Every structure is written in structure tokens, then in C-alpha cells.
Length: 155
Image (cartoon, rainbow, N blue to C red; front, top):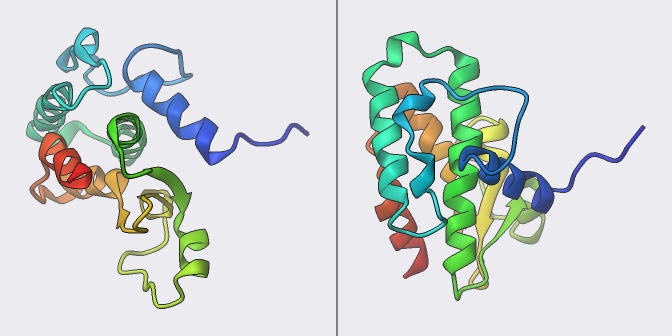
């Protein structure tokens, strides 16, 4: 049995797939709403992500749980990789369970899931959850703006 990919291999691959730079065995819902030519890893490109997510939310009734999961993972990975690529604060992906081992006072406020297990941290060891933010938005309409989120992480 082959080793499973590491977190730092898997999430960049998801980000590439979201940006149309690699193939995955599934398709995101409503790809016509996503202008992948403008997904260049810049903070400005996150406005394209916001537009796509807004379009999906408007058609929320047609989204399955699997659609929300796929979009959350792929778009969340893209947002996280954008932050990592620009950050001067040493952002990196980490599993929340690993982060909690170093920070025993960390309390999980969300149920354990793929949305909450893959998180970003930085040299100051602050924590953020772009995948979870998208899942919340698509599921409940909780306000989320990818560009503002990234800019806040980069401060």
C-alpha cells in the first residue's frame, strides 16, 4: 500500500486543482461560474473566489453535501496556499490535532471534521481555518469574504 500524501502535498494539489492547473477525478459544481484564468495565487484573485462562492450560494438548493465538501476543500486550499505564498509570517498547514498537542489549552469549538482538521498557523502560532470558513458560508450563509480573510491573515 502506498503512503498517503502529506498535508503539505495534498493541500497544494487541491489548490492547483481548484485553479485548473491539475486534474482531479471529480468536478466542482457550476465550473462556469469560476474564471480559472484569473486564479494566479494573488490576493486580487481571491475576488474571483468570492464571486464563485457567491454564485454557488445563490444556487444553494442544488448543492449536495459532497459539493459543499469538495468546494470547501479545494477553494479553502487555494485561499490557504495564496496566504502561504504571500506571507512573510511563515504560514503553513498543520493538523489541528498536532497544533493542540503543542497548545494544550486549544479547545475545539467545531465538531471534528475535514473542515476543522486542516488549519493554517504562522510563526506567532495563531490559527485560522479557511476550509471551515467556506463550509460555513456555503452551508449557512455565514458572511465570508476570501480576499478580506486573506488580508487579515497577512497583517
